[in-house]
Length: 497
Image (cartoon, rainbow, N blue to C red; front, side, top):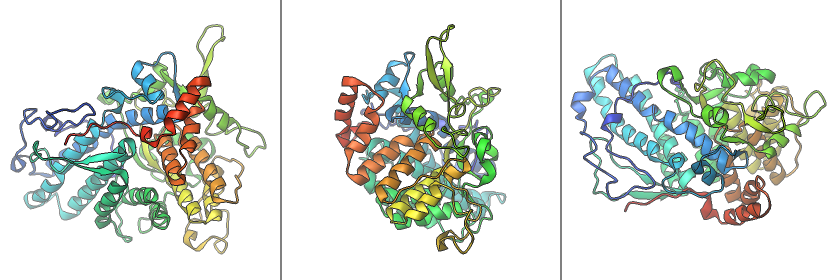
């Protein structure tokens, strides 16, 4: 249930009454956009439940590729080429017109309103169709709650605040004022939303894992003990019979396979958004990154990969760097002009525009756990997760909380890189952030990482200097000056009171 393939049914989309955009106006809730659903006519069978449920998840295909594009351009890992359109150039220089189509939040809110419609109407199907029982009801409801929480939390990280939508397709009230929560206010709200659906003996693995979300939320809240608890529980696989501990399943050149066969990476990927060009579901990243060559990696990222000390004693990240995550290309017949190219979404040439987009995988969660452990002062644990893991230690030598981690290779160990060393929180945190930049490049994580760390340190220069590094001269200084003001870290959101 954690991975959805060939999502083609948008059962409820035609009935959407709610379209929130950053350029919204008085027709924010336009009740003439379509007819309202009569729940008694729609929610009757098992098939109705699944169709409505899948309709909610289908919005991820419209969200995921744009989210990765925007994250890269706002961060220090991606920049524009001479082919880039004006909207991409504006994002790269942190200028945001309200009409910019790449930062339109309406797909998030449409998904939220759809979920608000489906959840309260699923229980009536239990009474009408014996094939849809209470177990299936609990699983689908938990999945939808986690998806809604992910949508809200992502919006908060993008915009700094969110509008809570207290309504569904059949009950949305265009005259009711919206409630806005800041990012930190939302964190507490979402924790309370998720906690009723978790149990340490729970065998469910939700599509957007509750434990991962709780770990992220507590990390944002700076409650590192609770963050460690939930992130570790997500990786442990306690009571589930499987784990997500960065094992040898995708070591060395096998790392590529995470992006070729996401649907089958059961031991590593929590959540992936599938695309199928054959079924009209086009992942636009290949278009932007490869076919049109509108965005490209920064030299800073390429240099970071090239500077790594590998297990052969030489330099270079052999399994994630050049030729895998990115490559060099030549744009003229005489090879006089070259450039860098993002390869991560173009590794399978036989399936154009069909690469899956991974939302959560084991290395991501492991490095978040390392971050939380480091903030708690557990430096040796943080370095183990970053480097060679706990699997190379005897059971007696492993820390009590990590006794089960006998198969853990560590993030750098999996790709055969020399361990990094640090003796204090700041140094180790810098190493973890560098590792996240390399391991998770172009996966929609980097900008959020920079904001989280800069806010925790109360150090705007941490973020401002990172972004300025991809510019030169006066442009670099202008960018640094702009981003020294944290209010410029968030996308604009037009309020409707």
